[in-house]
Length: 251
Image (cartoon, rainbow, N blue to C red; front, top):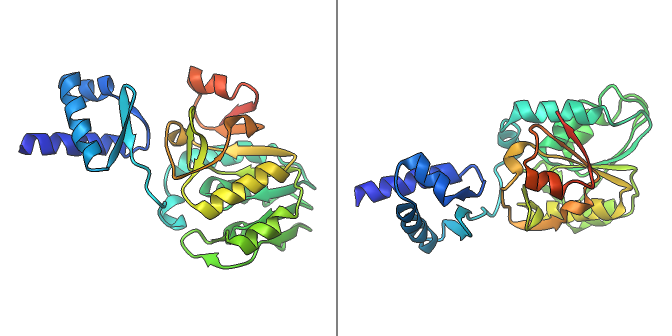
């Protein structure tokens, strides 16, 4: 029994990356048979901690992410590379919507030398970084602040952002899946993303490799709605095909 418990802990440890892992990969990694892994996955699914899929499994999506300061440290090097590459696509004078995701916050910090930007945002951090400098204009959505996200995403903020038509929306994402599209953890932030996809002329999505194959709580948009994808690793064949319509930039 103790051996089974240890094996289940090891399986969960590997699935906490947020990716879907195959039965064969888990079996090889743990030096057990495919059937042993299937048995452990059935037990974990019965406890509601994983979701089994054809040929593999993933963790059940958590209801929320951690606070912003904690998430800013996750995959920080990859996010910085993405931010530098994405910033190169933003000219002086651009009209931007920038959401409150951590990758978007990294991108905003790389735009401090741009001039005459018009920035619409629901992020307090983005507002602090880009407001009041270089002849920029800043429009900050108000309402009730979510202190974990350092952002405004309630109905008041959503109605405010809905009135703008940016040249470019710079967005982050909680998870990316071939079958479920783009997902987020926070319902208010997910709705902010939907508004940005609907109102912006073009959408730039910044997403590090950990987001691919990861599931989140709320679906936000189809992969086809992304115009520019900036990421840190080459895409596998399935994702390359799914994003074939978009401009893809590997940082």
